[in-house]
Length: 277
View 1: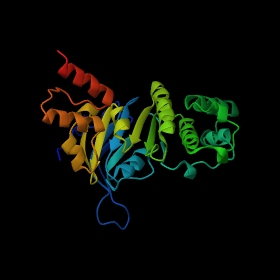
View 2: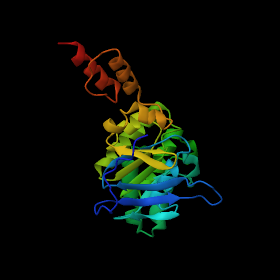
View 3: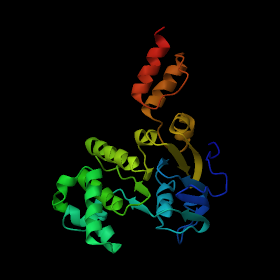
View 4: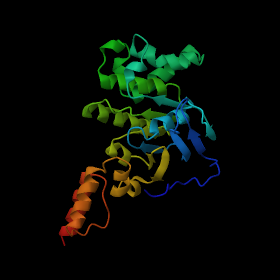
């Protein structure tokens, strides 16, 4: 396992939305910290994927970023607005009768004027592509629709950072694609997205990837740098992207691939360049 690579050497970055400095968290009654000595930043508008095996500490990291937990030692600083978090199971987050009522709960709790609440709800529903569901009973929605409603509710708070803790884990491929399209629209609004995920394709679409292993930050950097290191990923209990595994197998067979592509399309292009004069 290599040392953590991160653009944050120890001092706080002035531009960071969220900064963790040497953070350790020990759950009450536990003998071993869930996180130990983690330093990490989230910058405005970036998309950060946090990957790691089950039990690695990545969900604890998400809760610390969102302010749901306070570190046992070290410090977490959130600047320029709060972070909103969405969890894996939307059933635990939707409490109102209809979609628009549920999305309005957060802004209502802020005591905002009714016109502002309406504006936020309409904008959030449009961004998630679910304006047509506004009057629909929450109980009548599919799993993918419920998850997009949960994200819309978080977005209606107008956070500077949206944290998704395995938010796509229970979704079928079409629902994942729909949520991914919504995330692209959210990113276009300069909202930072932190995505806790096991999905290497999701991680490959991020600006940076942070690998958490046994409660520590094992590596952090661009996706092509982190995800192409098959030994690093495997040592953390994860499977490298399929394209990476295939590219490395082709290299072992003598195909001169200068880079290791993260997706099948890029791999196909690289193979053609390598075999066609």
